[in-house]
Image 1 (spheres, rainbow, N blue to C red):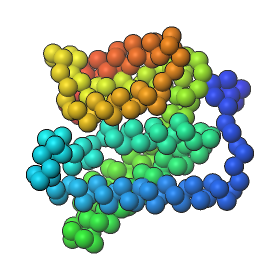
Image 2 (cartoon, rainbow, N blue to C red):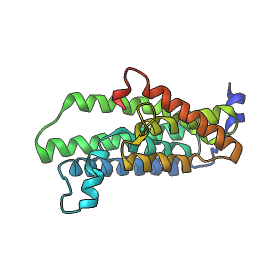
Image 3 (tube, helix red, strand yellow):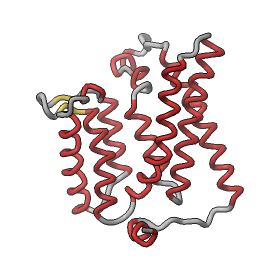
Image 4 (cartoon, rainbow, N blue to C red):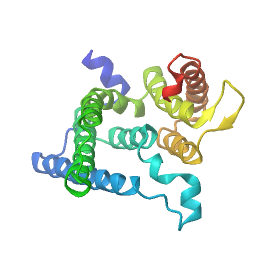
Length: 212
């Protein structure tokens, strides 16, 4: 199995322990800042900035696409799959901590059920980020992993099964950013995009498609 994974992408284990610890601390702090910012934005409609109000930017940061994109970004540019898993987990745990600490101490309420959902999602992200790291590798496995990420984001950005229209401009931008992050050689890129569209269609025809 180890040799199989090395053929997809080879880890770079050259960083010192000190650098790894500082990196981990940095991701926790960035996550906390993002969490506080997200909750601060929740209570603002940005009526004084019509462009932001029309984009519904406050609600956008409360949905999954932006966090999938950030998790992908953290994962694929890590040096090893384990660092991808650790960094993504710490970032999301930091985000959840910042969000609910703000809720508790600034706004005076703590929605424990929603908090537990995000904690569980953060724990699951550890394993997903480990896999996601290989999306920047070589071969069919990497192409499929890349297509899966892009397909999930595309399914949340564009309606493909009940007419063709955009759900959200910000979600479409998020999808575009993921395509740039996971870009490949032309032939591989073409296959990646075809598979991603098929995945998006498959997700939208499922009974739980309303959750996208």
